[in-house]
Image 1 (cartoon, rainbow, N blue to C red):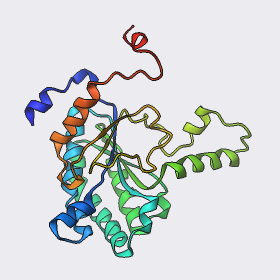
Image 2: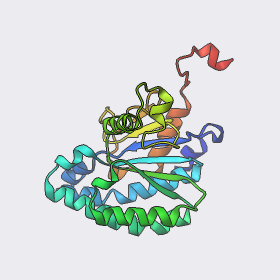
Image 3: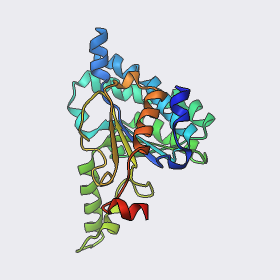
Length: 242
């Protein structure tokens, strides 16, 4: 693992990494246990990628924790996820404080159970003065909701014509730079309604590793892959080099 870490250039660390944490259910099925246990065993992966990102100097880490579509899952699984969310936020506070990590969130937070909203806000308040990495939890989030919500805000303000700057100032990610790198686990190769506007020029890294098994070494592999690429943003390679 240290060999991988030493291969990472300190001069090209992605400022913002977004992660689609996929494969908890399949991990549990392979163990012959219920899906909810897959979610419970994913906490170590969250801790590992959070600490690893902070240690490397990543400024923002966004974790896709619960999408608007996840409400369609069986009720027992949704209830278990909400309970797990509350407990995890409480248990991980010492880790956030130790690493001076500031907690934030995006999504329709008001749609979460009141207990989850309270625990989340308490943790955000307790970590707001931390000056290290910002950990963003995408909860009850979808990229389509984000764009539509921003447009509705602008319509309420009387806007008749909307430009890029107007929209970006009203997205839930205002103040957060667009992701440089997206990591998705479990071998699936899609973005699943996540940060649709923000990922226009995001580099993507897909791994077969199921999320509960994801550790720092897997994070390092994603960053090394990212650093081997030439980001052109619509320009030619010659223009970028110049």
